[in-house]
Length: 485
Image (tube, rainbow, N blue to C red; front, side, top):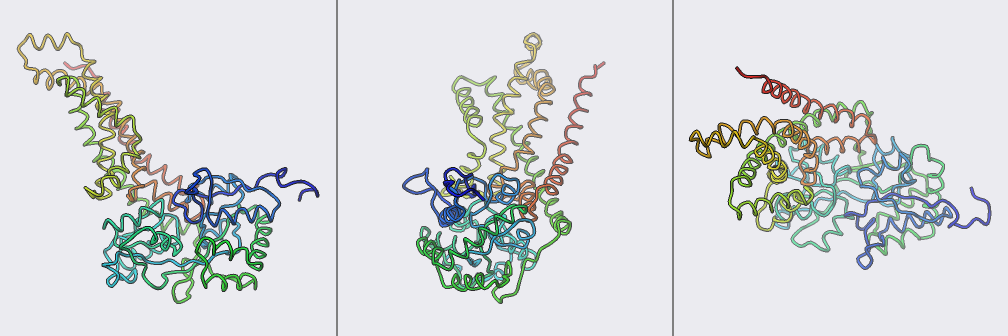
């Protein structure tokens, strides 16, 4: 490809995508040097780059978006514990498998005799990573066994929620489960495998030629023991890998996902079939989104009125406390506030995910609402207020009969704006395992390997929720603008 004598440093770098957030032992920041990446996929990326005569260059991409990022050209290859699935094979150029893993069930020690399989978890809550084979298996188990599948964006919090009792089990790769057992007590990995699959590298569909070169590098590393040395170093080498290497080197076709009996599962679907299958889930997620947004906005408005009234009418100490609250809520990310409510105070108060999401959004938006109402209260003419007091109105009557109604009319437009913003910000609560519309859309997009159909449906559903609200607000504004006789 390049003329002889051209050094690796003079060639384009081999850009590879991965996610170091909770990505151990695939890709993670070194404990001794946070600026350095370590992990067996990091070493495999270096192996591939050497084989291509190039220098590896890491590109950070969130795990669920690696396929799409590679397809659009942000990186040439994705390596971060990428699972071999029928949908991925259909949408991407996939390498030969280089590691075999098993989906295993982890439970609390006290439950090891009760929950031995997914069938035993009927009516129970089971967590896993979003966009994985394990999540697809749990969705199927929801229909078959009646369990509740919860998705996470990392592999750390499912196990911490299992410890806290928020989950009854976790279904994840044995690599992740065994790694977590080294730092977590009180949990047990159940013997046996729920399903078996492999890790692969992914290339854009148009990059098949480079994928073929990489396949040869991987086969060579299987023959000369390089992959074995890498996996042994990271403590993940086992008896499954020699059998896999033998099959790959022999050119045997390998099924994407098989169950404990060796039966192929999770067959590929067309995008139309996947859309029909996911549409009910998107509609259910829309209901969660609108319910969460409405409840949060009601509380935010009520708290906002109290805070605004306190800042206008309260004593100096009260005003100081309320100002501090407003600045704290506006000055820190809502995502951080959600994490604190759900995970940070879990040792003292274990809020359910929906309750934490509801409170987090409401407390955050109350700060913004209070500023709208305070400004509206202070915008009412002082002459009107003095006239009312001269006529003998009490301060409460002035507020409820004169100042409040006028302030509400002034606040209506920005309040409507805030509700539409809250409707969209509700997507953040997916970090607390609440399956709202955006999260369900992400799962859908990951499953089919494209954002075109899922993104279009998601946008249409958000518009269907927000446009009626805007229309009602405009009608109220027009009505209240009309002169009264």
